[in-house]
Length: 148
Image (cartoon, rainbow, N blue to C red; front, side):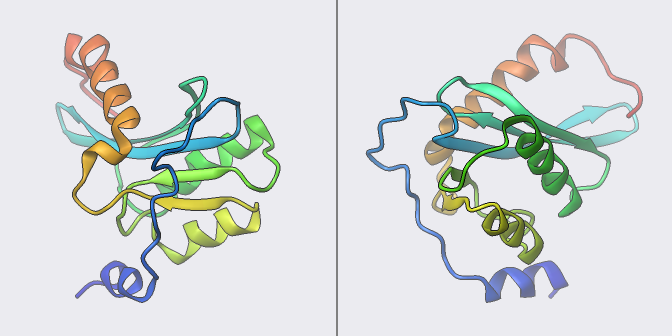
């Protein structure tokens, strides 16, 4: 068992705070996810964070490695862009990159409320899934990207 899996097993289950919520203001909810993009040499990974009200990308990172550094880079970009006050809900999927001690600590240091979709339920993060689908159909799939 790798370190990432042992680390995730030690973290508590985090509930989905968005069920039934009406999102009607900026910096109320940030949603996040990672997707892969095929390039000729393999894959790269894109982490994006959207403001759920505006549906605007407020943080992103691209890497050839899918590790904790990728989501942290995007999160730090979003924090620098928005300078949120404590209490913003940060909603994401379960996974070792998100549930890593470093990522959770960074969120808590800035006063975020953490929300997670149930494992294996893409409908609980449908806005991100929709964003990535649109991005891929309107940009990624239109040409073959050769390099990172």
